[in-house]
Image 1: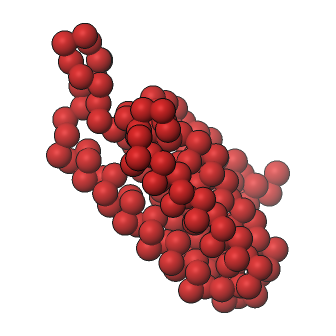
Image 2 (image 1 turned 180 degrees about the horizontal axis):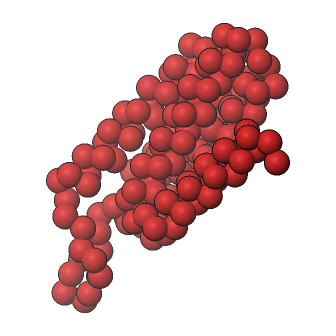
Amino acid sequence: MNMNSAVKAYSNIAIESKAHSSDPHKLILMLYQGALLSIASAKNQIMRNEIAAKGKSISQAISIINDGLKASLDLNVGGELALNLSDLYSYMIQRLLQANMKNDTAILEEVSTLLLELRTAWESIRQTEPRPQVSTPNQPVEKTTLVYGRM
């Protein structure tokens, strides 16, 4: 096993361990961060003309948005907000596909800006709303689970 493989394996284990020990709010933040990092990597790879690596980074960002953020939305409970987020995630995915085909860093920047705005809003939910540890009949379900399902 070469050093790069060892570092990559360690990183994967560290990320997986962190995900298993995180609360749902933190997991969504981790997904936003992962998508942003993948897009930043893709921008750098376009500038260095590393086309295969760029495609892999964009595919990773698409997977995080589609299989992580979008898939965890609770459309039945989240109502219009969850539906709007789902549509926005679909738009981001389409834009990332276009960025991949055109090697367009401006499109990547557009998607990054959208993700940053959503991440900032998601962070502010945590700061303004204390989270109960357990939902009881006398205690309402957290507002954050109304958009994203329980994880």
